[in-house]
Image (cartoon, rainbow, N blue to C red):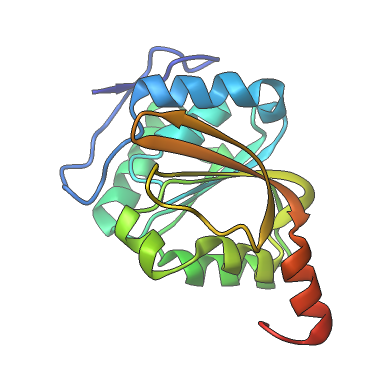
Length: 197
């Protein structure tokens, strides 16, 4: 069972996804994440990437985010997110994109959509095969003053070439890496030279 921890939807129960491919962010980590984000969530346009049950994006809405977009490739999970938004009477505040992550980001980039806060909780295997930070940078969907957070295993080192790393918070095997919306110097240099895009 998943419950919303804080804000106006506090205590609401969310439906789970009956698939081993979906691993909801434990309540302890979700609480720690929002304790760190604090007032940055208020009025923010929030992206919940690899959203699973949608618990992180809905928690953001509960704590004052203005709107949230949920990207989830698994059709069953995308339907659960819509059901969970309905449970919180927040259907008008959330948009669920049942797409592969990179394709969804490309679509959002083409529409000129930019987010204040982006949270990514990708499968660890996917992190080893692809770099979601790169497509976010190339498509310009994170505002310059925005913040990107990625959950990953402590043995994995996310890219330091796309965005500026602000801090890293360890919870045993789980780690949150926080990036500013400022493009890393290496990526900026490659862009100017025409390399990498």
